[in-house]
Image 1 (tube, rainbow, N blue to C red):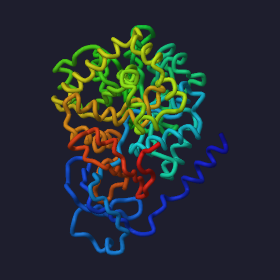
Image 2 (image 1 turned 90 degrees about the vertical axis):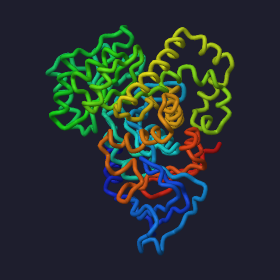
Image 3 (image 1 turned 120 degrees about the vertical axis):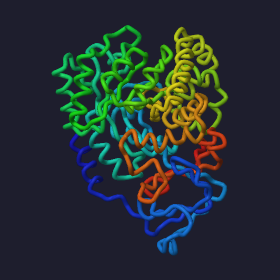
Image 4 (image 1 turned 60 degrees about the vertical axis):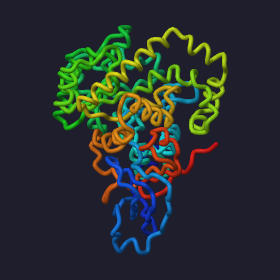
Length: 444
């Protein structure tokens, strides 16, 4: 523990390294996080964008020029719901929460163009030191934010047994007083937001009581913190929106959203992160084994996961599982509810729960989620806006998610236009973070 904290403090003391000279990215089509700017130059100086568009300033005169003819430039993607340091090959659990494993995961997010990651609960005690370190050095991967351990339920969600929480960093208050104390403790530790688990896990485990989650939400708001809630069902979503929760961190997957709830979410400014890919992941890889041969997915998988998923016997058994019909129904309901909420004007965040379990594949899941957003009725422009500008807004991070003067130079360069076909988000040419190219094409 002492060496980890010392390592973090030393790195935190070092400012982000500035480039030796300004950099001019030329001839790329630019999606700025909200709209298509067409082909236009972007000037970077140090870790920041200093100019977008023609009529270049004097600083561009001596800039190093990079020709991105035929490429599309967009902000680095922002994940509002992920997990880090929780998997090792086919296994998962908090015994894997180490500095090395967290950095491993953040580097994988970064390679896939996700330059900001929100670890929404189940983080070990070293989370805060690791966050300080990685946010000071782009070489360590995507920028990290999160909810510390989060707040769950005694003998309930997140289930310590099935989630492998042998050290269990999750606070589990039994009443309102303990809920307020848990929020105060987590704020003192330095969390970026509060995570609540308010799911009954299919009626198999106790659900967080109204007394507890209302007290936690009120206390968090009094302390200036947003609250994200893990839910599954419509009834939980209704109760939490009534309690003024800020973020529904999963989609509603049991029943259709009613117009009254949709309007209330819109009017209150409740954020909605659908995470459609989490249920689809239970069958998608077994149903589409041909994608295992493509570098974009193959490279994202640990060797033992790839070996298991490549077995026809595993594929058949997985698709025959008793839980697969429910997973398919959950995806269909989630897509329909996402379509309804988007049409009503509810604010959408972006996340996949990647990293929580092996089948929630870090990096690949985010690009699959973009396709699912489009399947739900969003245009490619709206899907990319959700994963960039809106996802940054959910976190209150005004310095990213957009390509504009003064913003961080966190950028994703694509070989093909994702506004024409969202699948082109996978055509990664380069990833930039804080004004430095940190990753290139994804190849085996």
